[in-house]
Length: 401
Image (tube, rainbow, N blue to C red; front, side):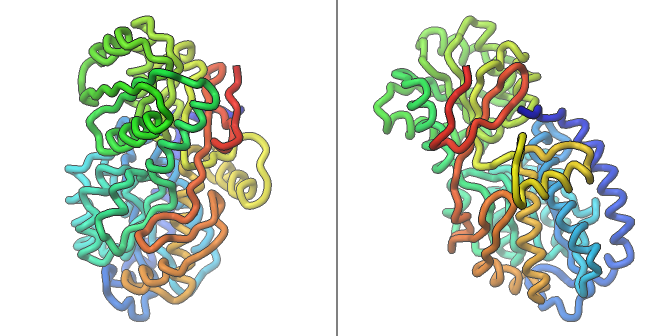
């Protein structure tokens, strides 16, 4: 199985890529449409932004979808279309995944940069903090990775995502682990971030629905240590520990659990699908850890559009595509197809997305009325010998070892 590369390598590549793309698009940036709900007029280009954690502790799961979007827009602009899409580095908004930073970045994107649409936000907390703001300004957004179920329940008309939510991910992970391990007692752990809380709640409910005894625990993500959680696990003696959260916290938690002598199998979700989980815990501690994700990373031998994407991505960024890279490409393609259809204003693009349907590289892309994707498959990965590998669809996969 292929290994997930360290996030610093991807970040270096993205910065260089962003500079090159900025130069390539500089000539058309001045002729961009007004963005928002404007008509677009006879625009020669429109601006699409990207928002997510580009330099923070969990940037390893945001750089790949940014790369995927860059690849899609570069391919489109290379065809010399009537209306180009400006996606230069100044439109890549680094929220560091923080909900208190995101609103000011959205204000800049709308008022100063005049973006017409946004890929992202990448995380659920920042998505929640700016969803109303984007909606009121008629800025269509497509997130490649935010999975909190509540995001679809706000009545936002301009919001979309191309990944299944945690109400799909939680049961998918629970069903798989019940078949694989038949746990009687499960400790479900979260930190205090929006995404983590939502996934942990979905996991707890799913395991309870299976008749297991479930205990829960929650810690502050900025806590200097997670010893209280390790102590609770020691006392409870679970057959399985399920963590809803990002890899920066997941790796640290897993290490402290193992250091405390807790040997129960460890399962987590898409936010921990990064090499940082292994490096944070240590390869020996992370061995056998299971990770669920509503994403299919093209590890190993793949065919069709996914193989074509994998080859182009590696040629462009000198690394294999990682988590949500394909979803970033598909989110960008949604905007591209709208522009190809002559839609250059926020309103027109948003109306187009309501009827959009195409075969993406990650999955078939079609949105429900509330912005959710029609497709909701969950895939399972496992750490073996310090590397994360794909086991397959959660309904068919089997654990190794």
